[in-house]
Amino acid sequence: MRKVLAEYAPELGTREVTVPKRQPRLETIFERDPESSSGTQTHSTYLSQRLATGHFVVSAEMRPPRSVKFTRFLQNAEYLRDIGVDTINITDNAMARVRMSNVAAARLIQQQVGVETIVHFTPRDRNLMAVQSDLIGAHATDIRNVLAVTGDPPTHGDFPNATGIWDVDSIGLIAILNNLNQGLDGRGRKLGTPGSFCIGCAATPPATDIALDLERLHRKIEAGAQFIMTQPVYDPETLISYFERYKQEYGPLTIPILVGLQPLHSYQQAEKFHNEVPGIVIPEAVRERLRLAGDQACDTGLEIIKELFDAILPYIQGTYIMPLDRYDLVGELLPYIRQQTVDRGSESAISS
Image 1 (tube, rainbow, N blue to C red):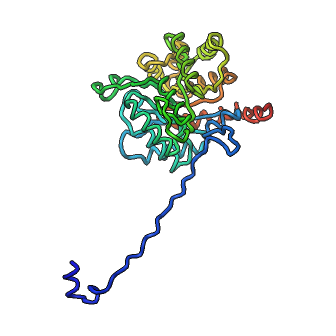
Image 2 (image 1 turned 135 degrees about the horizontal axis):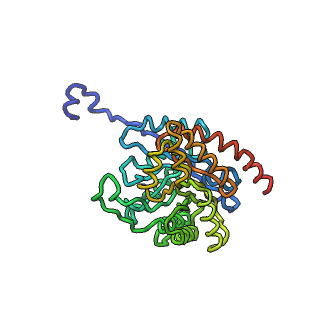
């Protein structure tokens, strides 16, 4: 090429051309430091800060898109931000149905909407190596709130022939997260810089085997869980007696509870959830109220949730609302919740 060019432009063949060196572009990355300069532990996320200061936390659940298109997903997240939720929690292929990676969905929300997220994380679809790799990657992209769940069996979902992995269950997953917060891998070997995950665990007050569920909850807390998110409840006594029994068997509960609230909008929906969805128990009295409400069942469902919320408020530090894509229901409930909890943060600040 040089010889050919020299024939047409001989002067270029004898002159040495110097290509200016391109200055490297530096990107400034601000990482959250789990420890302050004084060496004392600080709260790693907005969620952990709110819980530590006694503010009542409200999260709303979103399911990631089923396709590569995410415009409407972000619009719904913007709506939730504008009505004032504290966080958005994002499911991880719930009911074993394939959706966008919830870590990717959480990153989209945090980058483009500006609301902190809680990602549900299951070891069902990941072996022990992938679990740690994905968690480290999530941490690197500022996804720090993680709800550790075991996950629904693949036989219930879109691909019943898919293999469930479960090298660890939710208790083992919490232990891995706790290790990462100490700068260790799943086998206790040093990785370097400690992480700053805020670790959540699940509880099922309506569980068929309460003793087993309580025992597992206790093991989750011992493994390093920092907050609890419950399955939806519809009976105050179910939640209250569940945690009273925990106190009797294992001592005072030392981490905050975020109760699951799932508004029902029809009698048919209530019957389906009660009979077909594991972990959900809807009392007959609630289903009957919805049946009698007829076309007004959606309004009645909201009233049921408000009555439930009033009864359990002294026992909880937050809630997460599961609207199943009916985000208008969050808009209906949130003002009532804020009104009932308006003094919670200021009272805690005074008492501390």
